[in-house]
Length: 359
Image 1 (spheres, rainbow, N blue to C red):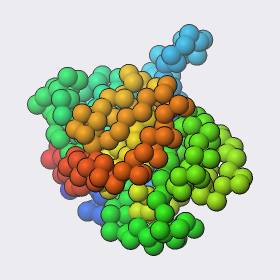
Image 2 (cartoon, rainbow, N blue to C red):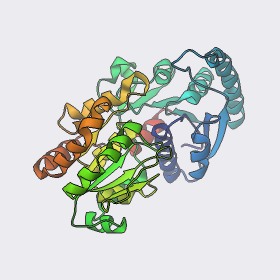
Image 3 (tube, rainbow, N blue to C red):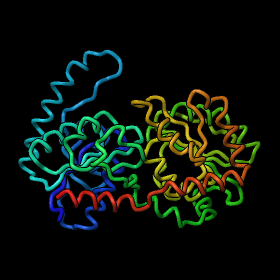
Image 4 (cartoon, rainbow, N blue to C red):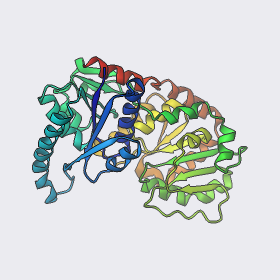
C-alpha cells in the first residue's frame, strides 16, 4: 500500500516526464496517495511538475560544470545543505518509499532517505548510467532499467528490466488514423510527413540542417512538421510544405501523423519511438554527459531498428537521408518492424510493481 511517496530528480524533460508518468500510475492504483516531488531550484521541474498537478519542493543543489568555474567550488556546500534540507523534508513527510529518476536533487534526497532506512528505488532511463545513479546504486533496494548490460554500472542483484515509462497520451498515437492526424495538423493526407523534434529546447544542429534543406523538401514533395525550440527563429517563407513550431503541445497527433521521425536520442524519445514503431533517424546530441545519447542510439542501430546520423555530419547528410528514407517504403517497413520488437509497452506498470515490492 503506497500512502506517501516522494519522487526526486529532474533537470530535463527526460527525467521529468518519467517521474510524472510514475506518479500518475501510482495515483491510478492508490487515488488517496500523497505524492511529493523534490527537485532542484531553478530547474525546469519547478515549473513542469506543478503544471502536472503535483506538489514540489526545491533544493539549492547544482551539478559540477564541465569547464573550470568558481561555481564548482560551491557544489560540495550546496550538496551538504541540500542533504540537510532533504532530511528535514523526509522527517516531516514520512514517505513509505522514495523514487529517484536521476538529476542533481535525487542525489541528496536518496542519500538522506537510504541513510534513514526508507526504501528507495532508482529508475535509470539511459543505456549509460548517470553519475548520480551509479553513486546511489549501493544504497537503494531496486534499480529499474530499460537496456540490457546495465550490470556494468549497477549491482546485478538489484536490476529489474522494466523499460522506460512513456507518457499516457503517447499510447493514443498507436491507434490514431494517420491521414486524419495529418489533416488535423493542416497537412495534405496524401503526401508523406516528416516529424522533426530536437527536445523541448530544440537542437541547433538539427535546426540548421532543416533550415538549409527546405528547398530540397519542397522539390521532393515532402511535408515537414518541425519543432524548433524557443531559441531558434526559422524562416519557412515560400514553403508550402514545411511548418515550424516553437513547441508541439499535441505530441499524440504529431506522432500519429508522421511517416518518418527525426529526433535526438534521449532515452524517453527513443522509448516513445519504439512503442509507436516509427521509422526514425536519430541525431544524438554530443553535449550530454558520457555521450549517452549515442549509446542510446546505437542500442537501436545494432538491431537494425534506426538510422544514425552523427551530429557532426548532419549539416551535409541529414536532409538527403530523410528524403531517401521517405522514398523507400521497404526500408521504412523494416525499421518499423525491428524497432517495435524493442518496445516495452508495460514498463510503467512494471516499475510501480517493483516499487510496491520494496515496502
